[in-house]
Every structure is written in C-alpha cells, then in structure tokens.
Length: 302
Image: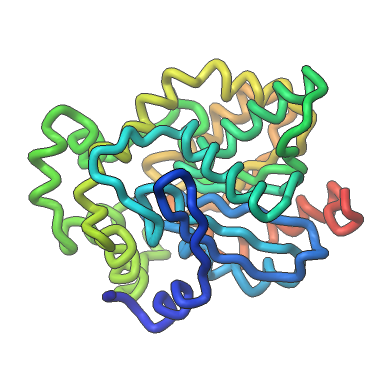
C-alpha cells in the first residue's frame, strides 16, 4: 500500500474482527487494567487520525481505535447502506468481543454521531435498568452534533447529492488533498505526509468511490436529531466539547449552538485551529482532555 512508514507500522500492529460478513480493523494499546478509551474517527479517514495522541493517551488508558465500516483498513462493501446506527452496532460488537462493558469516548466528526447514538442507547438502558455498554464520559472534537449548525463543504454536498456517483469518478488525490487542506486552520496546515497518508487510507480498496454512500450520515443526522440531541441534554454522563473554532464546517457555529442548547455547556475553544484539532494541535487537545478526565476522576476508576 501507499503511505508513510508510520502508517504501515500502524496497520501492521492492528487486528481484524468479524462484524457479520465484514472485517473490522482495530488498533489497541495500553494496559488492559486501565480504563478503556474508545477513539472514534471521522469522515473520510480512519483511526490513524489519533496517532498524534496515541502514545500519551496510552499512558493513561487502554486504547481501542476501530476503523468504521467503509473506512481505512476495514471492509468497504460497494453496495452497502452505510448508517451511523450500524457503525454503533459495529463498535458495540468489537467491545463485546473484548469483554468491555464500560468505556470513555473521544470522538471526532462522524465519530461524534456514532458517540451520540451510543449515548442514546446508554440512556435508554439506564431508564429501563437493562445491561449493555455503559459510557463513562465523552469528549467531542469538531463534528456535526447539531445539524442546523453544521456547514458541509460544497464537495460534500455534491457527493451526497444524486450527482455523487458521477462526480466521484473525478475525485483524485490532488482534489482530495485540496479539499481536506481547506478545513485546517490558517496557521496549522496539514503536512504533505499527513495528506498522503489520508489519501492512502481513503483510497485503500478504492474506498474513495464510496463517498456518496458514506456521506448518507449527513441526512441521518437530521433524522436522528431529536434522539441524539435529547440524549445529550438529558444525560448525567460527563461531556466536553473541544473545538477548533477556525473550522468552517463545525467550528464557531457549533460552539455557539452547543452553549445555547446544552444545560451545562463544558467547552474548550481552540482559536485558530481547524477541523482536525487532534492533528493540528495535539498538545492542546491532550491538555483539554486530560484536565476533563482528571476532574471527573477517571484515574480513580470512575
């Protein structure tokens, strides 16, 4: 495969699990006696997005970073109906396989929506007194938590439209890299190596041709808004938003909506940072997350 030596090492250290007829790629690290931290990546890349945080997080947590179905090194079925609720099923299945029943979550972009669905299930089980996956806390990075505050890029709107299956044939590495670089902060542009690795992940098994199907999550967010936002507003699970406010997709507008709608809006703004804060400002993200986890007592096993 193409990509850097670091990406090849990441892949070599991963495992695969079966989810129905599909293979799910999982990177796992850290002492299994530590609290589990589930890392949920966004569109259009993979769990490798969290590589800049990996070693530091592994000193505190048992890390689990799956590639969602259709992404990265997981299976990429061509005629599949990709849904956030199924991605949550995938995550739940992987955690059950590992006999993990309680996790903390760090999510980004599409991963935010998967985390919202997992939280909604957590709230439903709590209400009914049923067993199932429990969420200890969630840190959201930039993503479409509230559809009305989300600003998809023109290329995303076009690929998600009926024209998508035709336009995807024009998507090449140069166009992809320009589109991705446009949502980074003005002073924190992606490196050439990171962009090449992102393309390697997206184009692996010709996954870039799935973009119109994968982008169905934008419409699904609108359909599931009441359930997902309602769970966030009602939960007692500690939540924090860490947001790069220079992001034109889910930056300052998302922060403003979060402060407006959440009963106790715990927000850390990262001025000048764009859509990928874990890549653009990993130290700032680690600081914001670490302070949150210390405050809620993660190291005490809470």
